[in-house]
Length: 342
Image 1 (cartoon, helix red, strand yellow):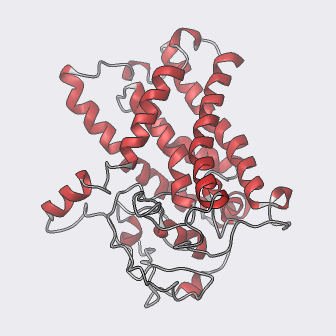
Image 2 (cartoon, one colour):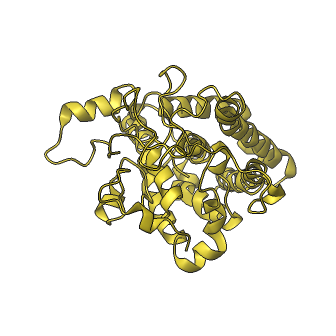
Image 3 (spheres, helix red, strand yellow):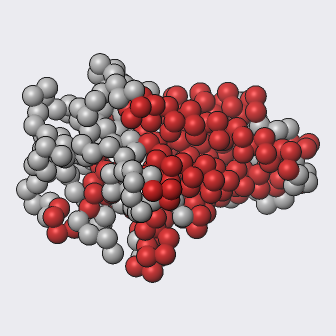
């Protein structure tokens, strides 16, 4: 579900870095993963500024890219409010097809680049194996087909229904309607920008809370287990979830019913939630493509590999505060003991 969207700048491994303590079939960075310099005391102003404005960092490149995609797609493909007063197949289908295209662009794009064209080979691929085929573990006996089915079916549909509900509420003056479509500028400019910048932080907090909830034994056994079939995740694994988990996961957008928001805030939140998992699950450590594109999340890969660690992401140190953080290094990590499905 996660990506390295916190922008935490990590030291890159040397070119002659070994494949890791796991042996030739598993790659491990030769440095410990760490959190972004947000909750440090005493504050490190220069380091925080580099993280916020530098490349790679919190803003550049990925949050800027996601915002640009959101702005363009909302401007040109969101149905006008006047048609959203009644739930009708036409405008809801328009949202679904828009969202489907966006997911294929990101998840499909990463898959094409890293798994079809294999532009990186298996260099810095966390698990050296490729996606599973000819196995009864997955629908259609194929991991990629299974992941696409759950992502494009239940995933995109749930995402779309949350958007349709919000548009309908705005159209009929329902819940949260008085908190939308305020002018972006003037007295609202500082608030608008601040809330936009905080949306990925809110997403991280929500993700941690929901993720801990769905690891409760009963919910895990009947719901979250489906996502954890992907112990060796790929780009399509990010949204490959049980329908109930999709409802939990996309509930992050409900905050816009109570917090004053412009439609751009809502759609940025929704699309960020839907599109970032592809980059966080593709299974490679960046930067890739001749060292130009920062990507990947070893932080979250460790959760798929060992299950009972790293429930959150790399900006808010929630796992560190609650004792579930693993930095990816062998010493003291007790990784072997955690490698089990409950």
